[in-house]
Length: 328
Image (cartoon, rainbow, N blue to C red; front, top):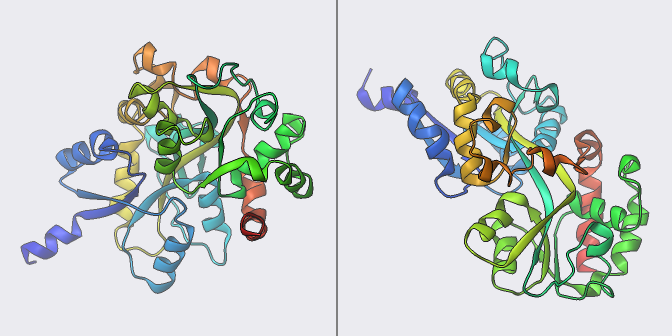
């Protein structure tokens, strides 16, 4: 076999989150060192659902595997004949250490992301305690940003309207949009990427901005006067999936088994601010950093797990309605 063909055969392309060098530091470089399998990380769209479907439908694999939210994984698995390969790694120690909530036949949870409220401490004198405070523009004046997506934004609107967190799902879209109608004029920006949300806070363009905890923590680590409201954090996990029908599925399985080692997850969590899905990984992180992660005990209090099954069946219609509402 020509050397160039051998090289291509021992190479996988992974859609990564694009957070600095975190992927290669935690996974790629050491995996290649131990296995000889080259790993190329590519940053894709924040929501890669359409991209993955197109690749599988056309059998043109720009990526071999991807990290996605559990909701996206569920939707890819349930749409049509399914767009994901079974992982078949049940005999690996990492899979066995994963809590049931973070795994499925086509999904292996890598990290926990919390959507939290970030706010500027140099302008917000009274720390908000919940989403009610966030949307109370009279008691908590200041410029606000929100995510340009029904996911998270609808939950925040309902919690701000007084819905009991334990009775949040199924989401009442009519009630949520009514609450959003009342604050639409007060939203200075609708962000579409984590990087944008961080920039809005760092630049001072807004005083309040819900975003993913890792993005806000990066701004805090950079010395910005920003704090996180952990109460009523909206939890989702992100994890590894393999595109259906791809030619490198077995190599991808080897990568996922490697990535589920606690020491690998610990490196990733320290670099990104997202909580590990395996408890043993949290124990490998120094306490000062562990306290900034969603899965740290104190930060779990009051957290709300996003109902990904609800969103799997509701996301398309909700996105259409939300998009029309934003531009209307």
